[in-house]
Image (cartoon, rainbow, N blue to C red; front, top):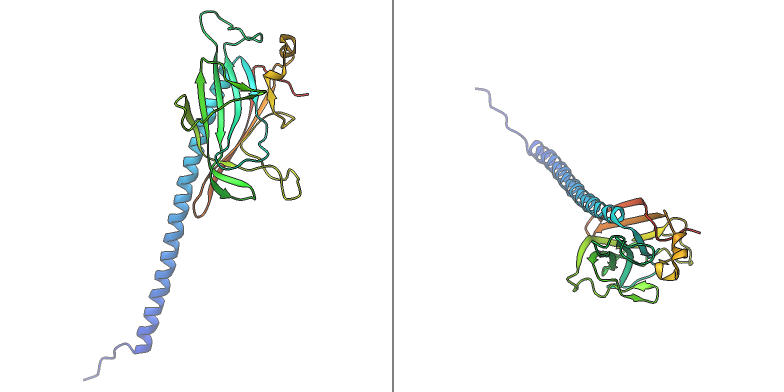
Length: 243
């Protein structure tokens, strides 16, 4: 009878090696697909949060009658620093009286608290938060700047947007080479605007129909880092002018 031949050791080792290579390739593909899926879910989460926040901001601007304060760009900041970004007034005329006697004026204040996680580029911080407060009481002003207090412990404030990234505009050589965020500024200038600078009603009548530019980046500190950027332009009812 003829003897049946089996696999040689070389053939077995070659088969094991081929199966191993295929297994490693499949594992790598699975890991990459899982990572990309996670990144996609994170970007959708960030995009949805930005969309909800901008919808609220758009509604506040649409319902406002006055713009009292716009921060402009934030040149530098340390972790935990509180910075007012925007103050709007509803049902408030240019002479600081209620437009309708049946309804009191109300005020919407947006404040930014810098995060505590170092990010790129140099000087950037992640995990910041923008808070929003609506109140019938007039915001407290220190010189020409509204006072936010501590939004994290003030029950009047609610979270407007989490995971906000801060990037200062100043580069290594003092140049404004970075993309500064968060940025709430009037079109044409990064300077701070405050209605407190306009002492008379006649001054305020000049300050109608200006443009507000908003730039935001939300970022998750992960591997890889996931972020989402948005830039919106709003037509403001009145409150300041671009010169």
